[in-house]
Length: 122
Image 1 (cartoon, one colour):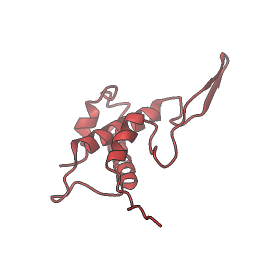
Image 2 (cartoon, rainbow, N blue to C red; image 1 turned 30 degrees about the vertical axis):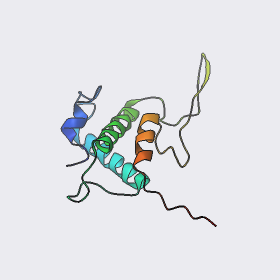
Image 3 (cartoon, one colour; image 1 turned 90 degrees about the horizontal axis):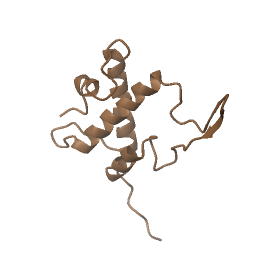
């Protein structure tokens, strides 16, 4: 089973416009999301011995949607502060070893599948 298909990502909320989100952009978003998930978790799925869990598939689709919406948004993904004629707004920023994305619900799911090194007691 694949991580995500273009049709699955196209069906997500806000991605129906094929003029704004062409198929090659959706493919690029899926590739970015797969790389992010595999790098952070430290393992690859999508093989006969290690099929892709539905949770990981959901994470890839959700990250793909965010990647695409960030391309057309005026607010950067990990902005700390926005300033306009009305004032400034402080924003929360994702980052660090346990936060690979700016989406807390995706981070919590990815942490469940993260391959960790064994603890060494001295």
